[in-house]
Length: 121
Image (tube, rainbow, N blue to C red; front, side, top):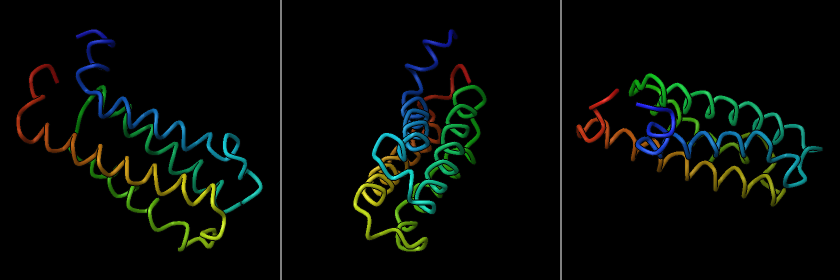
């Protein structure tokens, strides 16, 4: 299976990679680089989500999607846990990416455990 076929067949992981990369760069893109807790969280979680998605693209293991799902849940609560919920841009970014990451992780787990994508992996 070529890389392009893999990216297309496992689109949830491809999209999760883009979400992770987008989260990583979001402090600069959305102007909250001066917010230390939000920026560090976006950089760290974004990098881990992107790496988990890449790992899932090339050698899928269910735990990779579970880690992404847990990270998505962390993104949902992190604005309040880390004290930046008063800032609109980082809070919305974390919530939107968190929800999308959770949905994609659950979708990917469901497809893999349902046997829809077992061929070729």
